[in-house]
Length: 259
Image (cartoon, rainbow, N blue to C red; front, side, top):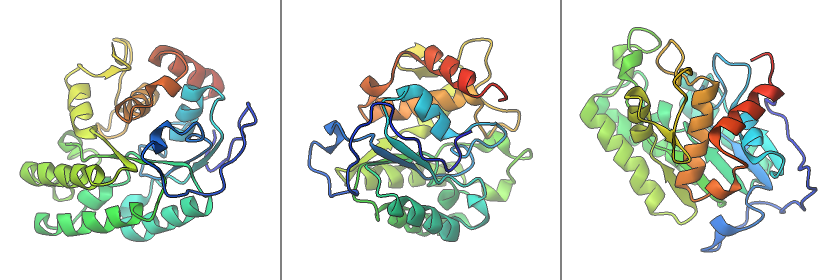
């Protein structure tokens, strides 16, 4: 398990000094994966699994990445602003060339507050991500209503209209910034629930694999592979993935045999 462990590139690529303000072609920079930081909540932290999103990234890029910092926090829901700020502080000190924030906005949208207060609180979370000047992939706001009564209470879940507005808020924030790529987590989750999800253009996961754990909230290892590959694909980075989703999952499980 690679939690909070930095992995040196097998290819020995030179490190980029810091997260300089990106040029219009920043997403095409060959140094993009030199220093990848992950900030997020329990999905990125691998809740219920023996691996995390950083493990999946290493399996997906298969040694072509540089250093990886895992600053995901499965306890983000306890204090989204305080713990989120600390995670961003840690990531900034790492001087990243790319940030994966796939589920970072989640608890700035969900949680025990009235729907009328959610947009303002989400703005505070996005302000933390605005501290990065390097490319960032940020996830939208999914509908996790199926987890009510299992992992979530009804008061923690925004109403449907509020969810749609919050998802649009993240999308608009991302589209206003060249350095930010929006990951449509909401549509992806809906397709997963309907059995119509894909990864790199192929139906995913296979029929004998569950994409979600029994809590209806957190992904399995196969689900986490789909999550990452779709995020990279939507950011125009699918070419960095070594092989297809099945080969990524096989490498992940080979590297984490006690999953």
